[in-house]
Image 1 (cartoon, chains in turn orange, red):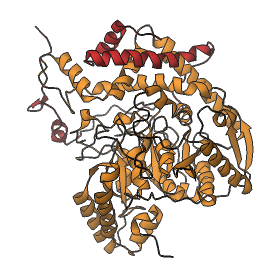
Image 2 (cartoon, each protein chain N blue to C red):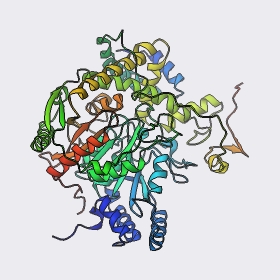
Image 3 (cartoon, rainbow over the protein chains, first blue to last red):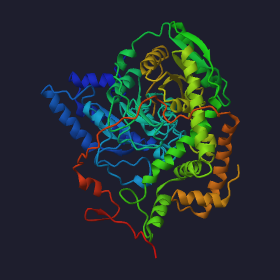
Image 4 (cartoon, rainbow over the protein chains, first blue to last red):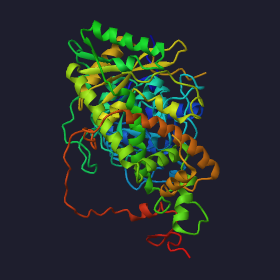
Length: 491
Length: 96
């Protein structure tokens, strides 16, 4: 069999090939830039491409390697970033008109860390505006399309990153997840996406949506690739007051461990959920059968408050968003409306013209939920139900080491299918939202294909700081259910 | 759950959003639907439940209040929609 073309290599294989001088960073970077040139117009995964900077950086990596200097484990390997991570001097838009000309004066912690590890930044990837969406259709740059079927959405909000990874327009990327925004697009694009424990990855320089839920994490084509990236971006950062001071384990080693004796919890509320596609259910059951054959033990668990998770989320996330997005006022950076005579009129018009419909909707919900007379009944109530949801997980993790669920109730839906009905769109996140509310880690790993040839993902959840268990179980599913990871976008 | 026009314009004013009449109408309907869905939480008895403000148990971290110079002032000011020297320039604050 012919070896796979360069762009289809795993991140680990590409990093090794550069380090061993089997290929130069320039060749690798050029190969991906050529692909982006050719294929990005078909799927709109990148909103900013950095050919000159990437090639210059690749040349510097090659020169350093010639003197045996290695920056880090990703020396000379091209990656992409969701356009929510600040990149110094490089436009960072968050998919919004209001930030369409914003050039951050500093790098996000994630940006610093992937650069310090030696990665080459190919560009910035499309996303739902301010990460508010499940389809990447709310971006001011237009939707990203699913590389497996370009009449379908890639999921969201990190849809640009998931689509770019699946189309082999980068070896891996980093996205963010507030209610499923890494795991759901990873599932719909047939790649691996991991949301770490809240506080595991620094939020410094990651543009805020809902601060008590937001978390950055890897999107990659294999579980070991995702594990390597998490080991590089995790860790304490004093610039983020919720960053957790806990040692970063060797996640890559966890991907090689056995699942023998691992207790796999099946939340009955998830597998009985209305709207669960039969093909998705079947694929998740196939993943369970493989884990059981390897000696894992299935146990039924109950998460009785699951049906309240979406309602809870749609108070807490908009409430926090309406506060976070108050900073976009046309004064210090970003878009400003022309011609307004007073300060308040300028701010109100700037925000009306700069934000898209979904962002305005969420600002309105959040402001309403925090306003006098509703604060206790809505926001206070949601914070209490959040406690009930956390207790559900505590009880489940007393019986199980890891929970197995579908990531998304259906495979990728069609472009435009849910844009007119915000509530239906919100309900597509039913399986991913509880994890954010509880602050626990979750991963999505491919486990099957629908009859129409669309990828299906299984979600695994673990207790706080249980990322190693997730990598162990996800890697086992990946080995036992080998599926194509690069979408056939050519031709 | 029905939301009135007045409530929509009150919340829009608090949100500093100059909505068009069309937008306000659409939002009135959509917010009504979404808030109706959200009100299902009322079915749960939460009298003795402590609210979650933090999903992961941790204390409040403290640090010394020390000024650390940023350095690249121009990179910050270059993003200003309007400036005068080292100041951000805005329309008049006290209206006639």
